[in-house]
Image (cartoon, rainbow, N blue to C red; front, side, top):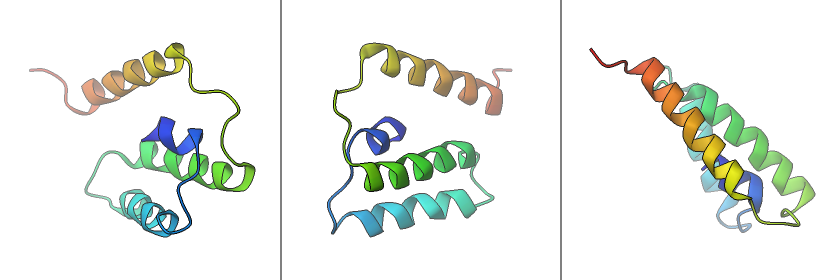
Length: 80
């Protein structure tokens, strides 16, 4: 979701629903994805102001997000 929020803005109809969904996870203390949700909010706001990216994401961006997600996941839920 992080990469999608930074790639292109949602439609005018979808924007408030997506923003509210992400804000719920920013303020929810029960989930451990607050840092990811904060990043999504900032990218969503920036993309809504600046418009879509000129070029699609490159494979390196996908790879870095996958690696960072697994590092985050292993930090939160370490193997016993």
